[in-house]
Length: 156
Image (cartoon, rainbow, N blue to C red):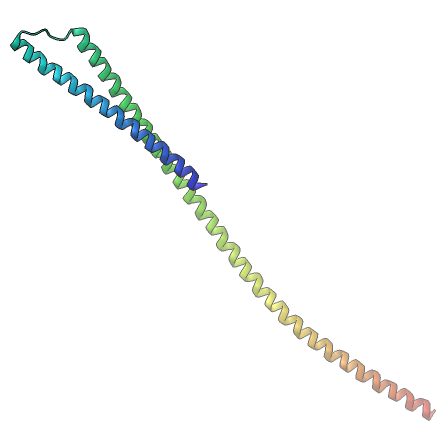
């Protein structure tokens, strides 16, 4: 369960990291393009060539702003996934600790029951010995009683 959840979350984290990297790359490319166009503006001013239109520059700025927003959103998603992953790990650790505690308790109980079983077996063997001794005594008394009865019958 933990391995599957962790693997799935790791894949999600990796996907978000990849998206973040792609957006940051796009953002860097747009910034570079704006800088190049700014440098080009200076060169064109000196050389007398035409400048990019304000609309083109505004469109690039809008794209840049959009990409920056997307990067922030991806960073927030990544942080959320990391927090969920940490919470899941904490829960799994807590559950594992509880299961381990229950296992230790169960093992202690099994050991106690084994000890009680050994004690009961020992007492059973002792009682069986006493029963055999009593049976032997009864057999001997019966034999003596039979002998006395025969003696009385013969005498009487």
